[in-house]
Length: 400
Image (tube, rainbow, N blue to C red; front, side, top):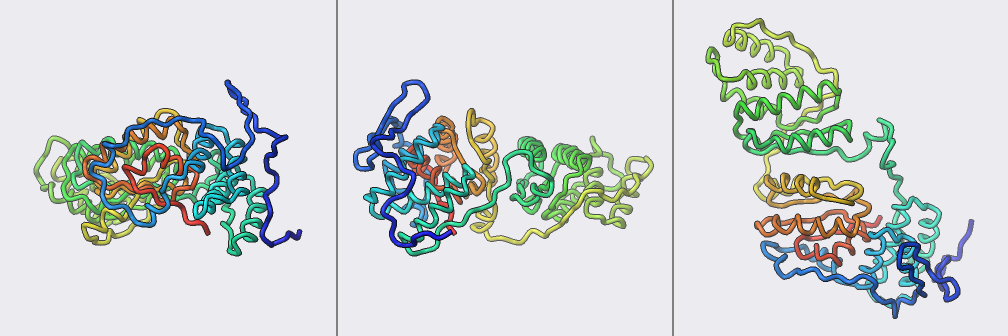
């Protein structure tokens, strides 16, 4: 197949005055798309003056990318409200008119993202040829994504591994974190547990973590365990041979972790101490059946420590967002720099974006910095329109 690689006169297919776009929802409208006189169809009236409190410096390149472009924000809102075809035709019109100056390439990137999300590879590649001809540079590359549902186990291994970082205090407050762990375990075969920050444990926290680890062992989840030896040291610090505490949970958790690490000799020594303390038969050593990978937590400066990890956003955000916001709030408790990884995020429903904004305002107001990373251009301009750029830095996904 050969194509004219010169500067394209127009993109096909595109709407014409004789081929109006039709909306099939109530209050249907018909419109001819001309980028110069396209009128906004959705009114936004969100107060943003109080959203700036507690917000810190935003990276310069993120600011440049989050400047308001009404036509592009309109297309993003149309996509967010499910009007994908209308958004597509509008972006094509913007590209054909080529009157947005430096913002015009963003319209191309938004259309690339739309075709990627819709898994329309033919349209994506056709657009790539037009882009290469116009700008004389390489277009974005088509990415083979895993289906959002019905993935095989092998396919599931290719996606990002969820990372749960445990706080300095391992106590009863970790129950919300473990609830999130339970949710993630239903969607992921491999989980990463980071105990590098733990500085103190108590029996209640030990009991909660013990139950969670035993459940993961039953379900045969593969684990990446970071800072396990740090955790064992904190548990050993509260144990004393011969002293019977109210619960055996710290002893049992210590032995559970030693088994995960396949440290048989240390397990047997601990089991003897446990036997002497509680006057029971020592438990038998059982090597883990699931795959366990260990890693040592690297010492980090206070600044880089908070930037080292991120909160993985879901593929789609729609409906009520209370659960998602609660998870972000929990993550923010142990992170001054709240990084929201949007590498898998494809679409945010219009109403859900407003709920997400309301949920992030208190976090920003508490003095924490929020940053959306690897955001696709459709979501980025929706966030701009909804005012999320006033509470968070929005860093777009690199086009490669």
